[in-house]
Length: 124
Image (cartoon, rainbow, N blue to C red; front, side):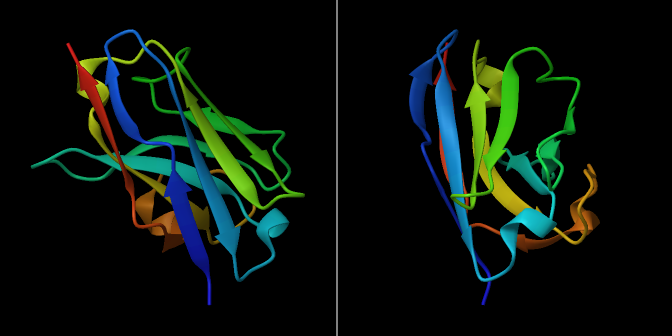
């Protein structure tokens, strides 16, 4: 049984930083790409960032490039999302996801397993 558990969300002022973490269990973590998605009320789930199985390749949505950094630690089965210069429009529930393959994808359908989400709220 694959489980993904996110943590690190919260309330922060605009311009501030948060670091999200996700711990995975139930499959060989280092074989698969990992991603972060987010969903704001009334909107579709959208891609934020992804990292390849090895950690060597990353991909970002244009809206977060230069502000967010995704990384992984295969020894700990962990993936992280460092979020800097946060904006009110970053407010959403953030989801960690484990891909079906080893290379990054921005497509929701490219991910087999999802966490329960963690709320990030950025006040203006």
